[in-house]
Every structure is written in structure tokens, then in C-alpha cells.
Length: 214
Image: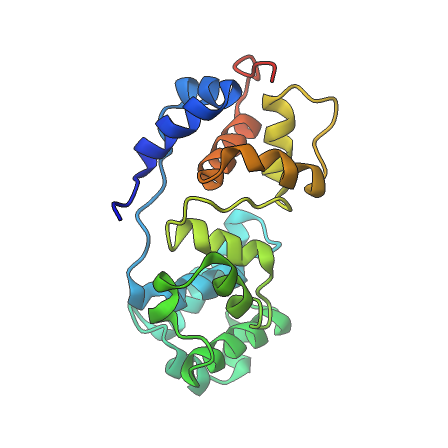
């Protein structure tokens, strides 16, 4: 099967819905960084744990310290398991986040989480495997699917930015609930990741004049 790129997916999404069509016209094709290499997936998951519930600048500082502990390209499960938790804590990690990264390392090291196989698994199976790791919830798993694996049909209904952006784009009095958003997203299949990206764009836009009535 030929893999659809973000640009083609944006065009296809625009044909499904007039509001999304307006957002595509305003913001152009979906643009995200290329997915990391397979050997970088562990580091990407560890980074996602560090960034949870922290402001971007603070999280970036702590993440930089964590990476510096191991050196370039050396943040591997085995290295994490050899590092005392106090060393991780000294980099600025909370005890819970340090324990979560160690648990992630255990899952990868003992084979419960086979990162090399994720690309061949279904979205739901990947989420089930990831949320078994301490500190990784559904939202983090969904972000990994979208940005680390390039999956095009992920719909993060619990994401406040997506909910707010949807409400702005469709001129709703209030942002939809997670349950409402789940139903609204059905018409965007199989490009719900792309629709989520445009909802984020709508939420971030300084002016909401590009939204149109549904």
C-alpha cells in the first residue's frame, strides 16, 4: 500500500469538510518533523515523560540535563538502568518521573515493550503497550503515534488544544467535551491526526477570522 504523505492527506481532508478546507487554505499543508529513527524511539518516549505537566522552557532545561548525564546518543535502556535514581533526580526530575523513565527502561530491556516492532502494530495495540509503562497515559501514547510513528488517523479527544481549536473553527459557544469530540471526529477518518493539527492551528491563531460555520 502506498503511504499517504501529510500534504496529500491535507488535500484529502479539505475535500471532506468545508471548515477544514478553510483551515487548509489558511495554514497550508500539515507540517511536522520527520519521525525519529527506530533507535531513537526510547529517547523520544523518555522525553515525553519529562515534558509532561511542565512549561516548555523548564522541561527543555531538565531534558537537556538528563541527556547530558548519558552523552550524545547514549540514552539507552541499559544505561538508564545502571544510573542511580538519585542521579536522575539531580538532573531535575521528580521522583515520579525518574521512576517512570526507569520503568520504561525495564519494559524495553526485558522485552515487554519491543520498540522495533511498533511500526507494524495497530494504533490500539501500541497504545495498550505504551500505557502499561508507568507515567505514560493515553495522551502521551497518542502523541507518540502521531509524531514518532507518523500515524494519520489519531484523534486525541482529551487534548485541550484540539478541543479549543475545534470550538473556535466551528464557532461553537463552548469547546466540545471529549465525548462530543470523539463523535465529531468520525467524519475526518482516516485523517484525524491531520484534523487535530489544524485544530491546534486554529487554537494558536491570533485571529479566528479564518473559521467558518459548519
